[in-house]
Image (cartoon, rainbow, N blue to C red; front, side, top):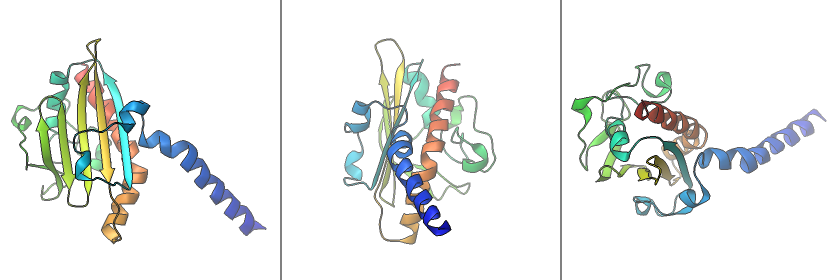
Length: 196
């Protein structure tokens, strides 16, 4: 009896996650059109296992937001998210850091303090679009779209293709459960910084 209740509870939780929580966390803040339309960089991972598009409106121009994105990275300005988790406890920058305002295609946006692991800048169209990739069939696109009212929509899209390897599965699980929480916080913190 207890085992049946456990199985039913687990199945119910899985159905609830798949039906209610997962769609919200994969497309937080994005309209249906934003979530479904192609973005620059989608071609780098053509058949993703996971695709997530998050978005936020910022009361600033792309030119005001772009510097915050250029300086992202561990050992750089941080990730503007939960610093204890994603920046090894070091606070993310609250100001624009002039020495971090230059990125080129091929540069690394570091994920570790040593800077050897990270995202490679694949495409850069200032001040509108930046596409990063990893060797694990992952892309992360940042798209800044000016609106008629003077605000800007920030679109953040992650595409990931799962492979039958321990590293790929670990990345997939982290992206499925942690990425939405971290990116949501990052978008909100970029908004608060750019609007001040």
